[in-house]
Length: 144
Image (cartoon, rainbow, N blue to C red; front, side):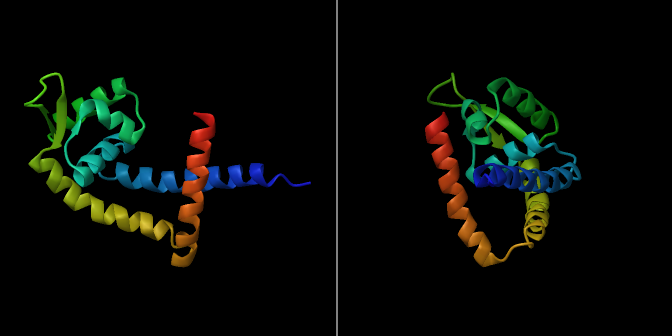
């Protein structure tokens, strides 16, 4: 008898690995690693964030965030600014250079991801999104 839960896990894992590899290769072509890109993408689309919250948003340990932020700051892509209301909090902002870089690289990156997903129709994408969200939320609530 076939275990569909195990089969689904394997298929999801393989599909995820394939898509992540497409994304990783494209991101690296811009001289960034996936974590640097994730931080820049967060700040580009969601605006400045407290350093302490970035890790939660992109699922990375706080010690690693400091390292990534340091690297992005060295590259001139972001700046740190103390919160005027609470000096214990430091926000990360995309610098003007960082904004320009994301304006250059995000549209072609988006196109690469879109092309990688052309193996399924728009209708199939619309069907699978809520199902995968439901699966993820259930797994989070049951096993966190």
